[in-house]
Length: 351
Ligand SMILES: [Zn+2]
Image 1 (cartoon, protein in one colour):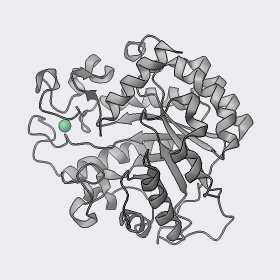
Image 2: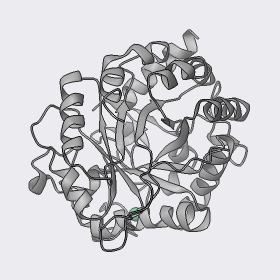
Image 3: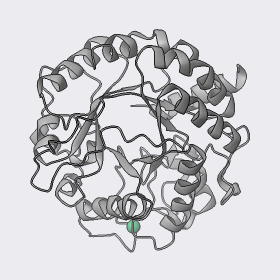
Image 4: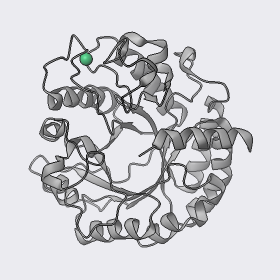
C-alpha cells in the first residue's frame, strides 16, 4: 500500500494548486468486555486525510461545511511532521500546516459539530522510498536500524526504536503541540504496517518479543495521552491481528510476531480496523469487539469493498463498533471529498 507515495503526490499537488471537546464513542467498554447501559454515544462518521501543507489545510477549511452536510462528524488529520512545531522547529518543513491554521480549522469544526483527531504516524512509517522523514533524519540515534539500509534500500519503511530512552520525550512534545493547536481531545498514534521491530541491528531490542515491544510502544503512548493528558487514543489495528488466524495478508494483519500485543494494551484505545478489499467476512471486527475494544472500521476507495465492510460492521449490532472511517490516501482531492462515492454513499448509511 504505497500510502506515503500518495501522500507526497498529494502534498505536491496541493502546494502547486493551491477546544474540540466532543467525546464521540467515548464510553470505554467495561473490564469484562460488556458495555455500559448509559446513553448511546453518537456514531462516528469519519474521514482520514493526509494534511501535508497549509494549502491543503486551507482547502479542507473550505470543504468542511460540505463534509458536515453529508454527515461527516469526525476528521482524522494526519500531518505527521508537516506541522509548525515550536518545540522542535527542526522537524517542520516549509509550507507545513501552521498553528494559526490549526486553530482556524478547530473553530470551523466546532461550529459544524465535527470532531478533529490529529495524527502523527508513530513507530513505523518513518521513511518512504529513499526519503527518511524528519524525525529520524534529525535524530538518527532513534532509528531501530541505525546505519543500516543506506538509501532505505530493501526495506518498506524505517521504524524508531520503542526502547530508545529519548524518543518519546521528543515525540510527546509534538503530540502535545498538535493536539493543543487543533483544540482536540484525542490523538491518533498510527502505528500501522510496522515491519521493522525487534531488529537484530538494535542492541536494545535484538532477540526481544515483537508483541511485547509493540505493546510497550502503545502503552507508553497510552500513559501520556490517556492517563496524563486525559485525551482519547486511536490506533490502527493491523499489528494486533494475527494473519494466520484472520486470513488477511501481511499488511492489514501481522506476520511479524506483534499480534500478541492485543492482550497487552488497554481496552479504552479505539482501534481503527482497516480493510480495503471486498470480502464477505471481516473476522477482525468480532475478534476485537470480543477482546473488549471499541472498533472503528475503515475502508478506502473501492465502493463495493467499502460497502461490504460497512454492511458487515453494521451486522455486528455492537455499540463497540463506533461507526465508519473513510480513508482517502490521495485517491480524491480535498475539494472533491463531499462528492466522493466511497465517502458519501457509505456514510449516509451510518446513523
Ligand atoms: Zn530497539
